[in-house]
Amino acid sequence: MEVLKIFLTTRLSVKALATVLGVGLCLTLIVAALVFGGVFASNDAPPQDDPVLVGAGDIADFTNADEVTAALIRDYSGTVFTLGDNAYGTASEAQFDLYYEPTWGTEKSRTMPVPGNHEYEHKNGAEYFDYFEAVAAEDNGGSYSYERGDWHVIALNTGQCYGRRGADGSRAGCGPEDPMLVWLESDLEANQKQ
Image (cartoon, rainbow, N blue to C red; front, side, top):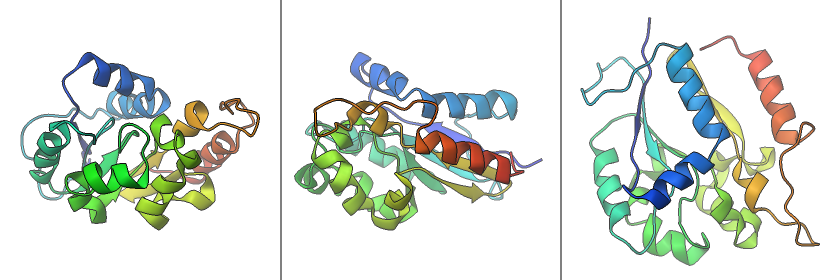
């Protein structure tokens, strides 16, 4: 059986913990994969044939925490994933250029991103989608899936549930008929991998 190794990095603060816990559905899916798939992350280097995911949320801002976590992800081969709030604050183009690009942006070619609520605080996520381009799956509302070895990995854009504002200023939320959840159900039905 192939093992999927998942390594999470984060700022070591209450604020970061609250943000990661706020990711909710993404974190729940990772935990479910760990529990039901029998996967256990460790500090040991994974065998070369096992797929590796390494990532975090609440990533880049004016502190040096993004530089520290970027150094950590460079120590691992495999796929870098983000859990939202990639450029903390307003997630504007300037924030991506100043804070994300020189740190985590060096690994952009192997990054599978997910937006957070902060990406929607500025231009409803447009600059997040511009920065990450096609891999961000704007045409599917920012949710997508991909394969790593025997694993089917799902990236859900739950940031839109908390951050996007309608013309009247209200937040959209993600209810039972939300296109993201309809897509998720279809994606799960179409896939037989772990």
